[in-house]
Image (cartoon, rainbow, N blue to C red; front, side, top):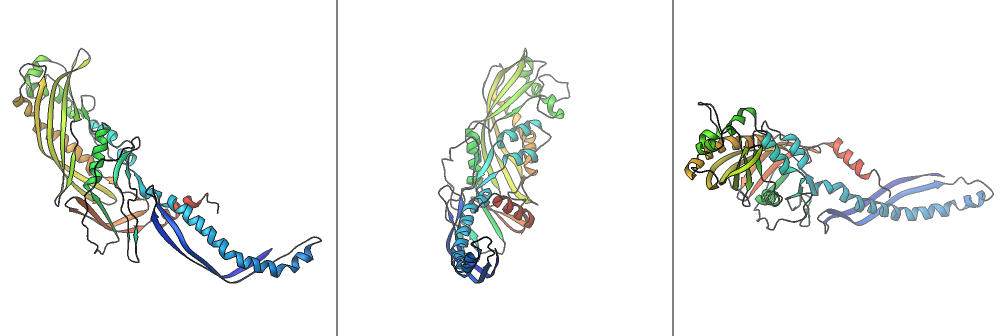
Length: 395
């Protein structure tokens, strides 16, 4: 059998909706098919060949009537069945692996902190409202919550409204409230991922001597800054463990972003091959964060503004709050720059393989941040994704 279809026209309308699990689904509402002309030639063989050939006109008439419904039904199954798969990347953005591989500093202690913080981290970008689609724009509202793979609990708080303008000459806008970053801090706090450890084993060589309890006359070390510690435990090393003591708070303002932190600082010394806890103190402060876009990366800069160190208890006689508080300026110059260096290295923008940002601009508002940009679609990468999505489709 051979034949032809001439003048095939398919018209259909598709509605994008948010499903119960937050994914984007497509519903084909109307579908119609018009065929100007179709004809199939039969070439039967065997004793019934002549009889079948006489039915050619009847068979062609039946095919012409069935083709419209057949095409529409298969297109409907294809679109409604595969659209969620194609858009799945938008509702879950894995960031942990990309961040851990990209943000590597010269400070092993900071690297360990970041690696632990982002392990299994992703953005739950599930749709929370029906999309708005017009001839001029497409608007979606997404959860925008950092979560961990091994965690099912949602953040027990909600984002504040973002007052945005609808007038723009840019192609793409992203809005993120401080809820996004507070959700990360909340889940990291719950998972005990906000701790840092500083020891002679994970500090750069130029800082390793600082943790010594005994040092040369012109050197600066912990034993010189806290003399009772050096006197009680000479010729050894100290280490510090910073543990989040309260839920951090992240807030956007028109100028920058502020993070408020509350930490417990545990001080250990090595005695007879074992770590002994000798001081418990607290450190409360806030840091200023400036976010920016460099190329296809979201980067930032961090500056510790205030840091108040207070002594709680100690097993060493002679240590008092005033002598211990002098560690605050040193901590600001030691911890802050290394964390800032990590942020400057940037986080790859989601879907950077699919699109290239053109002249992106970051604007800060009260309670949220806005990224406005034009973009160039990577057609080859987009086609590859579509092919992979529909590769195993049987309609």
